[in-house]
Structure formats: structure tokens, C-alpha cells
Amino acid sequence: MASGASLDVVFRVEEVGEFRGVLKRYLAPMTFDSLVRQMPLSGALVVSGGLAYFQIGVKRGAEKEVRRVEPGDILYWPALPALAIILEPTTPPSQSIKIGMLTDSPEPLKSARQGLRIVLEKATWT
Image (cartoon, rainbow, N blue to C red; front, side, top):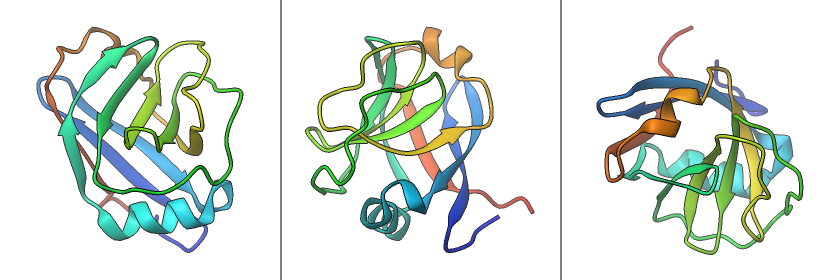
């Protein structure tokens, strides 16, 4: 489903699988718009400190910094810049912005090999 308020997305991780999620515009409207315009986004996966993340070429400031996160939350991390998926209870990286959440469990990402290719794209299902 794609609308002005939300966008269904899929993370495709080589050797691991697909992870469905949704980005929500109300969480950070300017960041949401910037990310959606640049999709698909891809990079090399890093798994560390309760996060799975990859660097992207979208540069924005901290629009609405988040202080609490849950496993499955999707964050934009402006310091790198990167997209991150929360894998376990943790403190979010400084100035992170929550932009959505996975609808699938992030559990398989915990054991993913470093450097695997990850792609975030708009979902094609209805």
C-alpha cells in the first residue's frame, strides 16, 4: 500500500531473505519524503550493538529525534547517514529518527554476515 501517509516497503538481504515493513510519514515528514524519492536504497549490511544498518546517500538533519525504540523499528541515522533496523532492546544512536517499523520479525538479521548487500524498496504487493 502506498499513500501520502504511509508506504509499504521491503528490505531484501542477500543470503537471508526479505523483511516487510511500513514507513510512516507522520513520524518525520521531511525525512520520509527524502527517503521515498531516493528509493531503492542499498548498501553493505553491518550488524552491531543491537542494530542492523547500512549507509545510504540521503543526507538530512535530525528532524524528530527518538529516545526509545523497540525491536523492528526502522530508523534514519543522520550521523553516517544510514538506515537502521532495531534488533533487540537498545539505546538508539544519537539523533536517530524513527521512520517506520518492520511487520516481519528482525530475528534472522541477528546472525547475518557483515557486508551482505541489503536493498530497501517500495513493496509491489497489494
